[in-house]
Image (cartoon, rainbow over all chains, first blue to last red; front, top):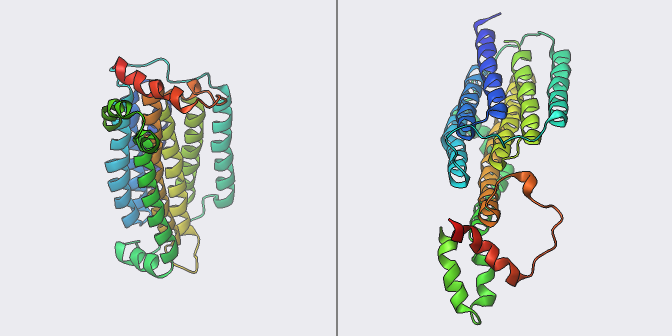
Length: 186
Length: 120
């Protein structure tokens, strides 16, 4: 076992352990913080696997943006200070399906790779990945930009309930519209 | 480097994500479990980039970047839906949402929008 294997084992154990805590903890806020640990360990995995740019993008977008957004959602919907007992539904089917998926994939991949070794390729720096993206993968890149724009507009339309109804009601019931305005902006 | 270690890590994380999606009632926790599954896929892609020699170099890492962008879009729209659900029904438990509900007339939906805000 080389040093990379030891690092991958340690970071993988941290990631899986934090993932177990994410799906089993009773504290809403702690689930988000365990998710930070899990995603950080995965970013370390990416670094060991010589994917530098993916690792730093993972730290920036996931740990920096997505988890903060999730914690905002936890605080906006319900922010209990202790454990909450109504987070789970009775879960034998979930354990069966999740365990089946995880262990089945594990058996498949262990059977396919069986302790073989590979040498790490050249590091995926921003320069090399940028060449690939802007030479071979330009069309998916542009399609993704359109998708991000549509997701942005969709999120705005979803979170403003006065957008879809404002036009037909403007003439008849202007008073109701004024009443519903502050709720829409909150 | 033995690729079976990150592959097994990714498989276990994917199984944990499936378990979390089916087990959790809180919609925000369901979204966290979806993030676990997406990250397992990212780890598979980055590891496959080291084991499979493709015609185009670093294709797996480029796809991992694409999946990260998709996950960011998904979490934005998903949280907008969750917050709208909380505003309408004052709950984020996914099994409290009736799947077969008769469509309300437009006039009947107006007080439902205002109700949680009046109570707040």
